[in-house]
Every structure is written in C-alpha cells, then in structure tokens.
Length: 403
Image (cartoon, rainbow, N blue to C red; front, side, top):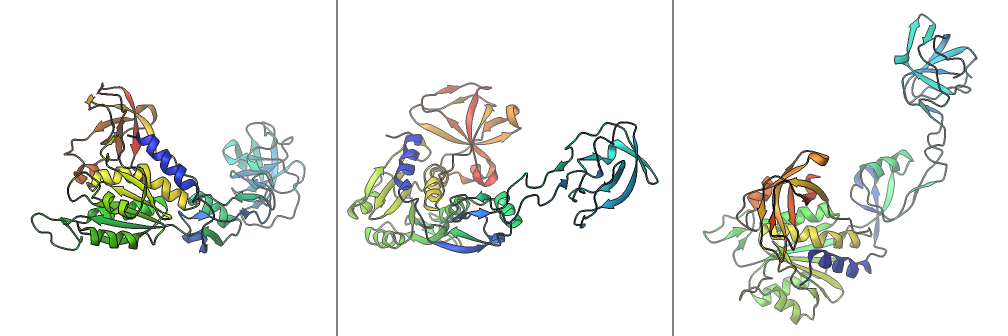
C-alpha cells in the first residue's frame, strides 16, 4: 500500500503529461483571479517611469542638506504633478510620496527630520545620496517580461498586469471537474431526508474545493447503488476533463465504483493509501480521462481531495502542482494513534511562528463534518508514530480555504 506521499507523487507523474497547452480564453484582468496565465506580460515602459519619492519630505542635493543646514523651499510637488524645473543648488522642494523627484535632486529627506519656518527648512541630520526615492527604471526595464505562461494569477500578479496596461489576459481555460456522489441513502440538499437518508453535502464541499484548486465544478448529482445507473453517470463524467466520485470505494457489497470502472477497462494506479481517514481512495485512468474515487464520509472526502485531486487540477490548469499547505506547530496535548497509517486529525491551531500550538479536536470519525467545521487544520501523525507527547513539534496541514 502506498504512503500518501507516494500516492500524491503518482498522481503528479501521471498528470504531468496532461499539463501541456490547454484551450485559452481572454479574461478581463479584474476577473482573472485563480486563472493560469497563457501568455507573457511585458512592461509598456520603464518602472517607475520617473524618479519616485517614497516619503513625504524635501527633495535636495544631499551635499547641501547637512545637519544644521537651512535651505530655502522654492515650491511643492505632489503625486501626478508634471515636473519640468530643475532643483537649484542650496534650495529644496517639498515633495509628497509618489511624486516625481525634480532633476538634479539626489535625495529626499523625510519631513520628520526637518523643521520649517516660512520658506526656510532646517535639516536635523545629514542627507544621504539616494535616500527615500526609487530611481527611474529600477523596478523594471521597458519591454521586460514580468509574468510568464503557467503562472497562477493571484492579487499581486493581477495588480502587476494592471499596472502595465494588460487589461485583457490570455488564460488557460479552467479544467472542468465532474463531481458524482454515490449511494442509495443520498438525497439532494434541498430535499427533506427520510430517517435513514442524508443530504448530498459532498457535492457542495467538493465543488468548493474544485474552485479553490482553480477548476470549474460540473455537478452530476448522485448515482444509485446500481451498476447500470453508476456506469451511465460515470460515462457522462468522463466527457469532462476530470471525474471525481465520492462513496462506493470501500469493500462492501454495494461499493460498486471499482467494479464498474474495471469493467470500463480503467487502469488503476492505486486503490488504497496508508492514511486515515481516506484509506480506500482510488486513482486511475479510463480511456484518456483520469478518475478519482474518494471515500464517501465527508472528512475522508475533503482530506483525500486536498492530498490527491488538488495537484491534478493544478496540472490540468497548465500550472505546476502546488505543495501541500504544511506548517509546523507544537502539540498541545499528548496523542496516541495506531501506527501503520498517516493520520490526518481535525485540529485547531493558534499562535504564530515558533509559538504556534495545535490541539486535536474531539471528533466521531470521518463522518463528523461538524468537527471539521470547527477545525482550521489537520495534525499529521507520521506513519510510524504511536505515542506523541505534548510539546513535540508536528507537521500541520492548514485548511486551504482558511489560509
């Protein structure tokens, strides 16, 4: 049985060949959050396009603005002003953050380090050449490539694209991820379930995880525990870029997902992983499409999606697979878990840096989604560990939606 690291690497290896160019679409820069860029974005001019002040203060010749010196202020420059006059020797000009430094000035002295009386400005410390302004072209040259194809667009990347005038961006179309739940006990979320039925919450949480991963969810509803119904809906799901099923992958009489997939000549890369929750997770390829079968209990579904499906969505988007959102934290209370599997335990982490502390929440197993709603992370108990004392440092997988 594979460890979760081996299973995750297997997914990445298999999907890597599918990472190649995707269909593209033009997206307004303000709407492109989470898309993967399919073009280069270059500067349209130098940045900054002028010597830009980074503090409110006075533009000076540094040699003139020594501690105790008094200079005449000959004007004011605010951000956006057109600056054409040179600075004269033994004078200064008041300047605002973001404004263009006048020609000749080689320093900006912060207003906090001066005293003004009318037009006279007295300096309380020596000015230093180059202080408090950004030279023209020091951030980027004209025509310089700033963003490249394959980059996922976050708020900084979008701000940069907007700054250089890239109002429309060619982006890889988001992969369409079919989501199919299984089980006779499942009813739609807007239904009133019978005593022994449950609402289809997995489709909702999986759709949210698909969006977070950069994909487009395609909800196929639920398949009954019948081979004909399951087969028909799997075939529909295989029309999309990726198919994710929840439920029906354990060893029970009516767990039919693997059976149906085998009859459809699916090649399986794994059908169990040494983790808890989520051990029965399945990954294979049916025809030209990849398929994941995730356990049906909600916590299992959410954990296995993060571990295995998220990197597949990354690669199908045309990007590299992102690393797991792992940090280290000090364990607040001792743990004892069965070795032989890696445990992902819903937990609550508080604090920052070296002071981070994490405590496992009380929960009733992989069906207890209410516990996960109180958690902001999972404590990762290594496969070989059984007893872990309070104060030990462990890896913690942060919930991606709460980062």
